View 1 (spheres, rainbow, N blue to C red):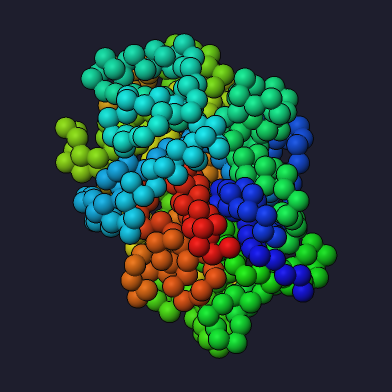
View 2: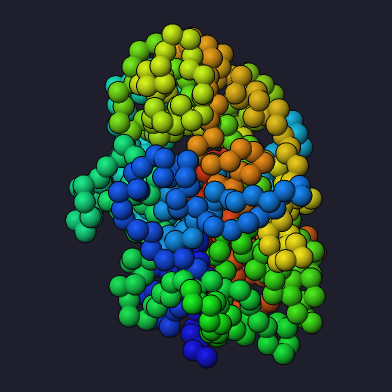
Length: 512
């Protein structure tokens, strides 16, 4: 059995960032990834292959409400799901760390404050090439440093949308995006191409994903080893039950191999990390590792998302329209006394997706014309934590969801608020609902996995402590979206990265 100082399980936002952060320590680090490298091929930019045939989605079966389904997320490659994410990298608002009253219930306070993460948000934005501009978002939290890179410019049709929103008295702002442009990184691969970006793999390596920004820099250090096609199947504790003594993995050939380490960092994604802990039950932990609270797998959240295409009266020639966001309705507003959520632009829909999602075209238009005139919006509202919304295992050891939607009035009001603006934004009054980014309709929204291993100060009410160490185990840390206490209404990736950097500083100073 090979022994390491640190084993990191997973190469997504939490695992890849942790690997880069710990690499300079000189400690012997092993990274285990269940998949391989995502192939750089023509199909990376093929709409049918990516969104309709789900070429890069996992080949496995999960269950919900007695029905089996094939999940479109997560993605098992070096870089995890960040290989196909949209790279919108936003900070939680300062109030998101506090208790917030919603129409559908209460979003609880976190065990840390925004101030605890603020310096790590700064570092995260530098590492992941975040382009943005401070001072325009009315809900933005305080910053000690400016964005490291200037915002991506609006193309003409999106600049017109920006002006039209301002004319309505609203405050649109540049959407913070993680993109490596040629002027920023001399080691960049082929030219930056943004036309097929949001939800697609990026063969140019311009997308600031955790493979590019985490794993590649980590592997420049001789003390770091990456083993691909090693699916971790079990964490084994020592005789006391207080430490993870070894990690068992299955290779692509079906062999069982084991590795040991002084410290284990689990970052397999909120769903798979919870499932792994449940599968690792033993005599010391009969209900699963780190599960004395009974909360492993509970409080699953994924945002109440809506994806809409508005059809404009004039063509939208934008190659990359994902440069604008609107947070005026994020908290209470003149429109409603409760939070609604965030509106941001999406990557551009094409004729194939329009035909797939809207079999009957709008009157007087072809699907090609609809796509040519489309403005594509992503509406994101908060999914509140509910202990009964959880990840479990069935008798065969497969993932099983128990999920009931909540706080849907916020989502519906945000949708109607946008719908009410369409005429003033130069669009038809009807919108086309699409699901291509998720691949499957709600409740199988798996793109933003959070909450299954919530952190806190009370071991009876949380799985992890505020530094993401399992209360029940002395050497196990979790740095994926599982630690979230609430979801907020912004994409979770930057917060995962920032908390990972915070945990990495603790490990470097106090543990390794």
